[in-house]
Length: 366
Figure 1 (cartoon, rainbow, N blue to C red):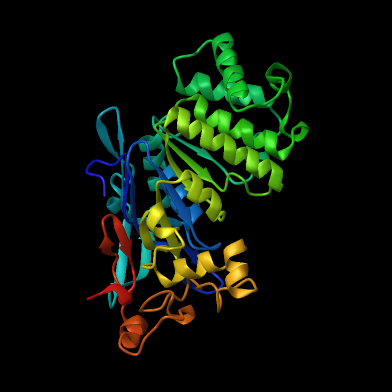
Figure 2: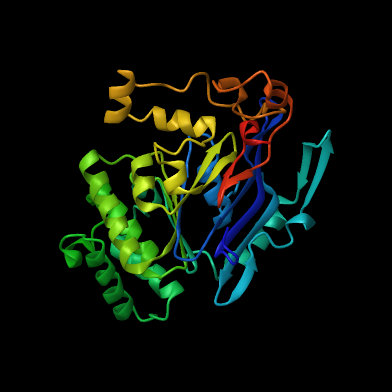
């Protein structure tokens, strides 16, 4: 791990309450990761593993209660470290039983006001986010150019409308939107999905943030446009070296753009380390879930070796009823008789098995 990361998340827990089932949905349940300045952290995992909720928790955008109930998120800006969950414990009361959270009482209104106060100078300026669906993220009643201009005026030194417009046009051109001055006055419904995504990238980068969070930046786009967006992100990473948290189902994109990878399952991180270790097919030491993900990719190697696409057995974990032991136990094909009882009844911690490479699995203990 880096000695002084730009972003450090420790034991983050973000819960929601299901009224119909009278139980907590443990969307994020003990996530700990960090990102060094200039690095890209790729976050992979099946739908429902907690990737997007982790990102929204960092941005302070989880509005449904109880939301974030525990953890630390520290962010370094201008030589000063900011606690993004400052005074969280003052708003939350947790009741436990057998080391499991059974009840949460939270002042959601008070916490919301506190988050707005803490994030006022950080959200948008220091930390920017590209959302999954660009058309639904943009205001349909305002031109795309005006939306970017407004963000520039709000978060940068370019306060005059003319200066902000020129800066917006520069970024339009930088993200390869054709005819920037013509597109400036277009509304989101008049642009394709790929153009809207480029506009979202331009809006995020126009304020020159220290950290960019890209949540499924190619979702919903056709294959050709996806490839162009990936090429654009690769070019921007090479040119600006911006620190990025990249969330995606596309493991090939994660392999290309990321320095480190966090593999999430059931609301927590099950493997974390350098991309060359975790996503390389010839690196043997992997979490069983990571191995299953890589084996399910429709690649030439997998088809040649097996003759068919391999699906991960079983169902995705229900985070309402999280097991006492390993969260992947019910789907794991590598459980041995020696560790079976541990896998079933005791959850392993993340353990370092190589420099900067951590795995949450009993197979790698002792």
